[in-house]
Image (tube, rainbow, N blue to C red):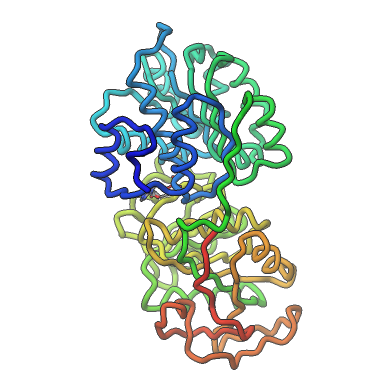
Length: 419
Ligand code: AMP
């Protein structure tokens, strides 16, 4: 399958080929022709599936024709849950729209109003916004949404999780009814389904299976942890594994992210923290250091880590287990980027007994229980853990590399289907 059959303009095809994209991902294959046809879409797809290009390419193609409406407001509005994701999408508009004359503005919380006011007071083609800040601008009458012809809701489930429902409804009410709406979400059920009913018309549903070909290579392990000190010792061991390039560590709270990064710093790691209490500038600097390879370990909270796309991350550690399987999928999707292999390791406390089954059911992947020799857990809530499985197979075991951890449930560490 190639991009050339999807109905995209030759100049966009040339850009994709320059980017080295040889074939569309499943979500792109299904969504691009449908979006170009002009109808509304409800797309269930995971992060890392190539969904950004699936909506941006049709969006950029739309800009080739002049707007029927005069005025200043954006023609395309993309709503995202976090500033990181918004900035990532904005960056993608420039890589996919290489050479195209277009004006973009990101309108996100945590950034000064001044620049946003300036950008919104001039003609702009694409606005990428988080709902809270965009609603502020609407209330101040500093943005005109009367020209929007394409509305994209990216990661709609997450926006609702974050409590943005009212803002989204208020924003949509100001957008002309004759628009096209593309809604992307990990799930289309429940509250997302109800939002979809309110904001789309005769939408076509596109379900991209969770077990997608685009993420084939994330090996997943779980380790039983007794307490904080045990977790730190296990993390220390994993971080010192030779094959580990860059690591993203998830904690449950902002405070824990700060504390753990301080502790790792004390152990000599190049480490930083990323969470929602930091100023945007600090967050951007932190991500840049990671991208530039100046930092090996980033300790982050769920929300702050969304949208991180750093190919060097080949280990994700769930220091605190995720609350639900969806969060797990988003977290581990930060590794295995750009076709590279990745490893995801989850530390399980006594209260996380059922999580592995839940994750396995949700993702269709196998998560193999492991122990690190010398760091066996005392916690028996999970039943006996047999540390004498196949020896010397590390967290990177499926790559047949030596390492300290051992498969504990008798199952081969998986290098199964991704999600
Ligand atoms: P996304 O799900 O939009 O965050 O995309 C995940 C990653 O896949 C990004 O690094 C994209 O640059 C990359 N990507 C998207 N589409 C393709 C494609 N057709 N071929 C190769 N890489 C792609």
